[in-house]
Each structure stands twice: as C-alpha cells, then as structure tokens.
Length: 412
Image 1 (cartoon, rainbow, N blue to C red):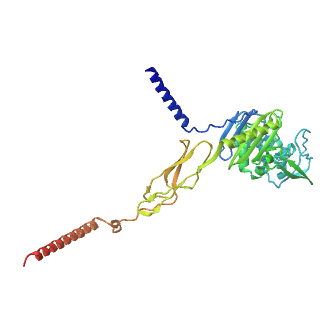
Image 2 (cartoon, rainbow, N blue to C red; image 1 turned 180 degrees about the vertical axis):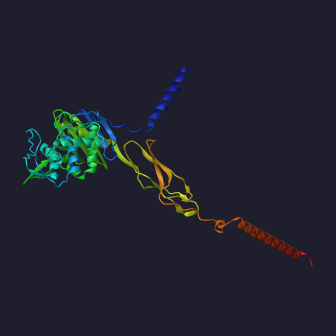
Image 3 (tube, rainbow, N blue to C red; image 1 turned 60 degrees about the vertical axis):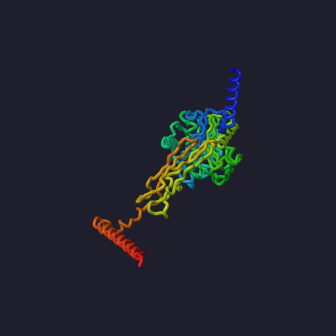
C-alpha cells in the first residue's frame, strides 16, 4: 500500500515538474555592469527616467564637468558672434589651456568649443570674466542662481573652471539633469560635444583642438558630453549615446583612471541600450475609436488620444493599450468632449490612463415625422381622427366586397 502511494506521489510530482518546465518563462533581467566609481547614474534623455543609479545624490567634486554650467550661462547671456578680449589670467602650466594671452581676442563661438573639447581653463576664465561684466565672482553667482532655478539641489559652484576649490561640487543625478537640459535647449552645444575635433581662430591664427572624450569618434553612436579630472574628483565623464531611436545620458564620478571612466561609461550605456527600449504606445491625436452616431447610419465619429504617452520599458515587458469607449453616440456633442479612456498596460499593470476626445462635434439626430409636423396636442387629435376614418373606410370596403362575393355564389 505504501509503495503504491509513493509511486502515485512520485508520478504527480513528475507531472507538476514537467508542467513547470514547459511553461514559458520570461527572460531574466540583465545584470547591471560592475563599475569602479564613487557614483554613477544613467537616464533616458526623452523622458528623464532614471535607469541606473549608484550614490546618485552624493555631493562630490566634479572637476571640469563644472564647465557644463559655465557653457549654459554663457549661451543664455552672450551671442556666439561676440568677441571677447582675454583677461589677465595666468593658469598653472599643468592646467588644460589653449595658450591665450591677456588682451587676445576670440569669439564666444570658438571659446565655447575650446572650453568643451580640450577643456581649456583659460577659455572658461575668459567667458566668465566677460559675461560677468568684468567679474568672475558675479558670473559664479549667476551659475549658482541657474542651478537653483533648474532644481539642482546637490550642486554648488565656487569656480567656473572646476578646480579643486571648497564649495564646488555636484552629484551624478544633477550632472545628468543639467546635461539633459543643455542637449535639449542648446543645439549649438549639442553639435559641439559630438565633434571629435574642431578648428578655432585665436587672434590671427588657427588651432586644431581635439575632444578629450575619446569615445566621441571612436564609438559611432557616442555623441557627448564632457570629461573632467582633478585630484579630489578623480576621473569624471558625462556621456551620451543614441541608438535605436533612444538617447541615454550617463555620469560616472571618481573613476581611478581615464581608461576606467571610458570603459565604465561605455559599459553603462551598452547595458542601457541592451536592456531597455523607448516605447510610445499612445500618440496625441491618434484615432483610437470610431463609434456610430445615432440617427445617422452613414456617420462615424472619431475619438482621439488627448496626449502622448512615452516611456522606457525593459525589453522583456509586454506593453499594450486597451480602449474603453461607447459604441454609439447621441448628439449633440461638442468638439473635444471626453468620451472614453485608453489604458496602457505594462506587464498587465496599468501605467497610464489617457482621455479620449471627440475629434469633431456630433450633431443632434435628424427630426422624426411627428416632430417635423410640429406635433402638438391638436395635431395629434387630427392625426388620430384621420387614422380612425381610414380604418372605418377600409373595414366598410371589406364588408361590401364579402357581401358581393356571397351574392354571386347563390344558385339562379
């Protein structure tokens, strides 16, 4: 008896295991790369979604990525064709520079290129001094004001260059937020940071400048953004790349070497493109339902999405939309009346509800016969009498017809 029970139990277990093995299992999420950094973040540029974070809000020295804010304040307060004279600034020999001499003239256009590609400290000082109206401290105050306006809660500046000075810091999350804002609002800077090299004019001479971010030009889909390095900050890189219609922005802070910051940036971006995709399941103005209109069989209304829903999802996530809308409409209905909803499901879980609007006004149903006659009480009485008279006449005719037929059937 025990042997038979054990045999049946084993058979049941085998069937259960077989069923589990035959059931489709969703692919496991990819493991994020192991980064040798103090902090790192990656976001989607279109939506701002954070896709990876490590010590995202930690306030750290950021070296020359400070110049992202220097560039923003310059672009918002100066014209690219303006020409500035270099102030009496003498950087240390170890600083990155293009060799500007006091009084030497250079356009804002070329100063920005020199500051962003080879990270020239003398170009940054030139811009800060002149945009600040002859005061670098005034320019730094403008930088901090702009940081507060952008909601960069973990950022403060004490230099336009990014040297190791007290009070100059930011976080990985603030750096990618600032880079996203720059890339979205400053097309000139977006083009500059994607250039492997450029030629600028310094006085009467020209000079070829090379981008310190060697991923640009070496990796076809990498298109920015800014490098940095000091003793306190270590090696820093704010990177960006575009693939499959999606742009990702990353930041790695405190890498131990230039090679490490580049390899970690590349690994982080590759992980993002491999694991995630940008989806737009609902587009504003798209027709999602065509209900019938009462009283007008040849007319179909259009219900359109009120807004666009766009979001980054893991590639293994099933995304679909479910439309809830009436099958029949009765007018009159005004244009853009809310008459339904489209629900976006990700893995079966609702993630968005978007109203459906009536694309064009729906008229009232056509009038009936009685309504067209102005069917008041008197009219109804007259119609009733006419109907009754018609019935009496019809019955009388039928009776006479039957009587005539009966007379004809009698024998002679």
